Structures are given as structure tokens and as C-alpha cells.
Length: 446
Ligand code: UDP
Image (cartoon, rainbow, N blue to C red; front, top):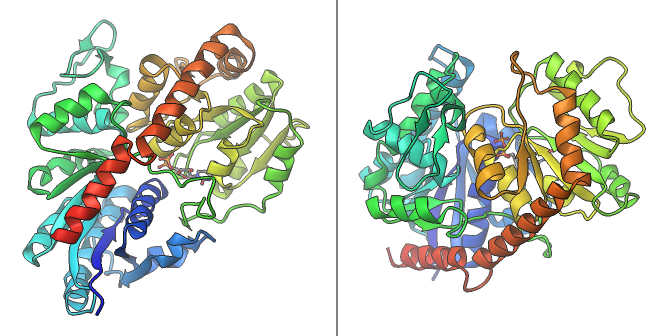
């Protein structure tokens, strides 16, 4: 008679949220937990299943999309539609699985879906919340929720002091706090992560103890937490992909191209799955890469391609629409990562010891850039000009500093140190390994 513990996983349907949730689920599967991943029909139709072995063991269940009703910016509509579909369909799915031979015990849900906890509790399940941003960033939003962070109006000179955090300037905060633009929907989403925080049965953070030690201790003094990161697929196994992608990767010719390059000679550049850049910024990047005189592999998503400078070709560069970023970052030819500082990209580079040029664009990325450059010292943070453009000189100069100058050696030494510490955290007996094992044990007993 089957008695395996069964959980539902509910990721927020963006690549940067799906990846850590999926990796956590895959680790739980290896601990004999059955996992059903829940999403909507429309999201599921755009998911590409990759060849990874354990991801094939995750059962995906879909919920019909509700008729779109909300209005507002594209994020508001996206968030509301997802919430509406899931709140309507999830109770039925839970009831179905409660009757099955693998009775459901809990839901693991993304922190930006705090309402999922109420559904779980109402239907007799436990709830584990997964935070997919750095604990430092989460704590800033926690202070916003508590009303203990007042945003200064002036940038220059005003230093923000928060418990267990380095002194922060305005532009080190998540950008949505000082540059809201049209995105109040996203700001509310991030502050609301803490609306049901204390009631969650487990609070999981995709980070590791040594990486954010002080702030982790501070947040754990408010309510107990488990650090389970970095949630990176292990590269030395068959299961070396996350397993589900919203983007179709290019044919693997880029890996062959990397094979032809000397160690640490290539700059990898990607702005993740969401960022859209203006044409002027794209041009400065293109010119900066050429001016750096390094080989480069640049991910320009299909939807961004038309913004490349007309007829842009470089004999030293290769442009792809999407790649297996983990395989690229793990390749010995890659010596530097020009990144938008998304939390997954940052953790991947840190875990693989790749120095970064931190070219943060918005949301949590600005705070992560501060951590990369000033706290962990594994990269250089670019500065934008008065028109908010990072110029080609700034880009080329930052790349050269890492690839050719003395500062690069120091950054590489730090990168090697953090790579080792990340490995220790997830290896058998490490802090994150222990936390996930403990979580799996508690799930089976619940
Ligand atoms: N990624 C990828 N191939 C690419 C670009 C990105 O597989 O060509 C993955 C990357 O490894 C990371 C995720 O997409 O796991 C992006 O998440 P991140 O938090 O870095 O940024 P976001 O896309 O959420 O802004």
C-alpha cells in the first residue's frame, strides 16, 4: 500500500520563480516525497520539458484559466488572472488528491502567492512558503510591511540603516521603492509576501547560512526559517538541468563554440527572462562588448532581437536567443558574467565561481548588485549616466577590470571562496542539505 508523502508545489509562473521551486521539488523527490506541480493550462502549454531525469518524476496538474477580468498594467493583469484561476481551481484539485492513494500533506507555494496558505489551511493542509529572492531583499520588504522602513527622499548623503544589514543608500534598495514608475502592482505584490508570513508552517529561503549570515539570524529571530539554497541542479549528474523552461533553447552549437575558446577568455552576457532594454542601451552593450576586445556569448531573447544595432556582427561574438545558462557558466572558457543580477543568475554564478559585472536593472537586482560588489566582492557594479544608460566605456572598462587587471585577481579569489562555501552548504552534512532533509522528515511526519 502506497504511503508516500505527497505535496503540491505552486510556483509563480515566471522562469526565475519556476527554477528554484523545481529544484527544491527534485531534491524532495530524492527523499521519497511525491510532488505534483500546479499551474494553469495556459502556462503549462508554454512549458518545455527538458531532458532532466527527476523533473520527469514531477507530475504536472493544470487548472483551467479563468476569464480575464482585471485591468491595470500588464503585471497587475497577469497577477490577478493567475490568482483568480488558482483560487477557483485549487480547492477541487486538493480534494481530488486528498482522496488518492498518496494523500496530500502540504503545499509549497511561492512567497508572492501568500493567499495560497489560506486555501491550504482551510482544506486541512500545511503550507511552506518559498522565498526566491535574497533574504536581504525580503527583509527590506518585511520592514516595508511592518512600517519600520521610511524611504528617504534625497539620495545623496542619506544612509539607510536597517538591523543586520550593511548601510544602504537609496539606490541600493530594491528599485521599486524609489522608482515606482507604473509598477505599484509589483511593489504591492512584494510587500504582500509578508501578509501571511507568520502563519506559514515552514519558511524556506533560497540562500545559504554563510552568504547572508547576519540577516538570516535576524529574520530567524522573528520566526524560524530554513535556508535551502542555492537550489542549483548538480552539474556532475544526468539531472543537470532545471527541467522546465518557458523558452526554447538554441541548438547547442554555442557549447561547441565555447569548446574552441581558451580558459576564462569569454564574457557571457544575459539579462534573464524578463528585462527589456531600450535600443540605446542595447547599442551601448554591443559597442562595449566589441570595445572590450574579448570573445562574448550574448543571450538576446527573440522578443529583444529587433533592438540590436542594425547589421551588428562581431567576429568575436556569438548571439543566442536562449541557452542552458548553467552549462555556460560552468564552462571553463567563461571568465566573466555581465548580468542583470536576477537572484537565480547571481546564485548560479556565485556557486560556479564566475566573477560578475553587475548591471542591475530594477526590482531586487539593485540590492543584489550592492551585495555582489561590496559585500561578497565577487564583481563590479556598473554606473549609469545621467540618462540612465550604462555607456559602452563603462561596460568595456568593467569587463577589462575583471578579465585583465589586478582587481580581477582579487575578485576571482573571492569568487573561488564563495563557490566553495556554496558547495559546502548543499553537500551532504552542509547547512542547506540539513535543512532540506529536516523539511522532508517533518513533511513525512505531518
Ligand atoms: N536562463 C537560462 N538561459 C538563458 C537565460 C537565463 O536558462 O539564456 C535561466 C537562468 O539560469 C536563471 C533564470 O533563467 O535560472 C533567470 O532567473 P533570474 O532570477 O536570474 O532572472 P529573471 O529572469 O527572473 O529576471
